[in-house]
Length: 89
Image 1 (cartoon, helix red, strand yellow):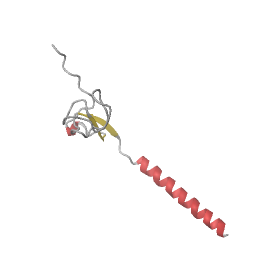
Image 2: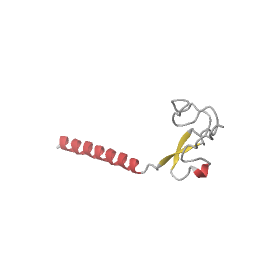
Image 3: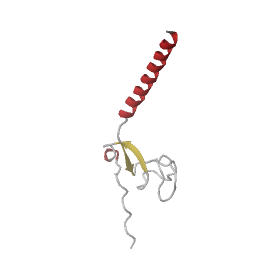
Image 4: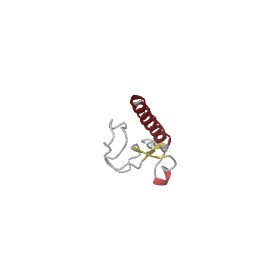
């Protein structure tokens, strides 16, 4: 009887942990890349000029991006796509 009680308690803890992590995954807000808003050293990923997060050299570089909540990028002054550089004459 004691073994059965312990097994039931362990099974209950495992089930509670599994359902809690499933709920946490379902509530994550959607994210999108937002170009041109990253501060120097605070970008989320690499670009053509470097290969790593946190390597941006200046604030608001048009090819640097950060993840933001979906639907907020343009409100923050950013763009959803990298703007093409003006052609050289």
